[in-house]
Image (cartoon, rainbow, N blue to C red; front, side, top):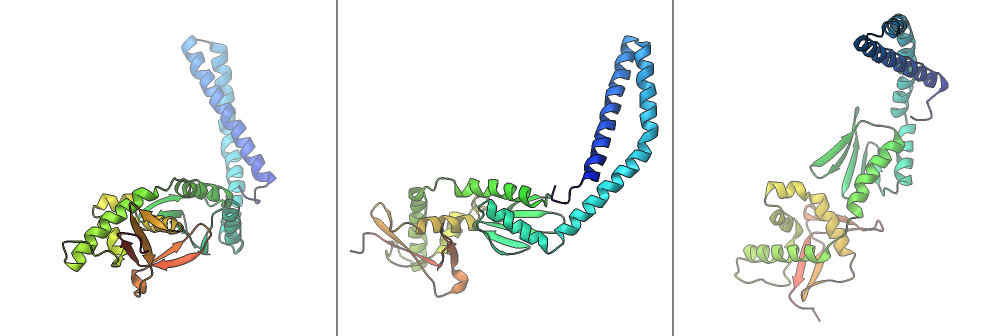
Length: 265
């Protein structure tokens, strides 16, 4: 609950909890007494049940009125200008490096989108949703999924191996040559397409995650793998570039991968 929780609602919930527990207890007592032929307990349990059930409609009407009023106030809060402020505060406290404005936030490789009845956390085409709009609970939900990705160990060698294999193939095909033309730029988007030819591969490895891996790879001072030197280069075609955001929040755009067979020196 938010700060709108009040004493009247606590009292309403408490009364209903007490009544429902008493109903459940006496119903169990009545069934047990019926099987054991405990006539006195059976009669007492039924009498108490009847009394509570007679009082239930009036009590329930009052309780739900209080709860509906509080939930309406909560909904008004979510629709107010203060709600995005509270959401952003909760995300910052959870160390989520988001950018954007309500109702859309991005923190690579994720996107967080608010709709009328739910909130969606997307990683490419994969997404999860929650219907909990309470800011702190929402931030905790997001943080668990975000940390699961960003705290995962990055296997740079494995990634370079996959990039190298894709680079060699795309390089030869695009230049119609039987051998690799080392030092020739190859579009990163073409490499991603090759790495995810199978639909299941694209689902398991969405483009935002590929871009996130590129950002982690680019943070290395020099990218080397088995005698090859890798360079992530910008592209003249803005539509064919990826926006990389490193761990410090710095942005850079890259579009091509160049691999040299040996160090340029």
